[in-house]
Length: 219
Image (cartoon, rainbow, N blue to C red; front, side):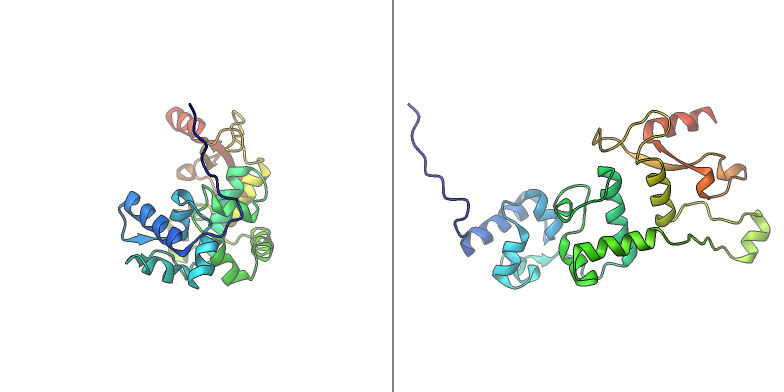
């Protein structure tokens, strides 16, 4: 015979002891001496913002259980924008604040708030950055040797433009992370860089990992 069990109300306040115990459970599970908010989001029971409000800062919270702070406080704009691009590519559309709590995001909301004051401002800054002119620079000596105008690897800004142009999908088979979470996209040269192709939007295309490997095997 099934027994009745008590289920606490969803809005019932969480005790400090419960928060500390869950932090400890996650740390023990991961066998780590450092615990970041992004890791806790994946394995913890509570919202990191609840923990931050209770203890004042995330660092103070993890220090309660004898751990070292795992958060990076000084992300560069490039790192913050790279994370936005990864989420955008994964979804195939503009990410929301809530997307920061799930893979593939590796950065929580707090660094964006510290740098840009809000998530909306962060998105606007990213779009302004992505829409800017992409300028490739190499030194004169390299230019004389290779006769190339561009470096081999596309910048974050150029990658975003190519992915967006190709609807965040493989141009050969149509695969996209939005349809299949396991899909991995690459920005690839149409005319190989090693054979004189430049790293320009007209010579770049979006390929899934399988199609890109198949292309490499043919060449």
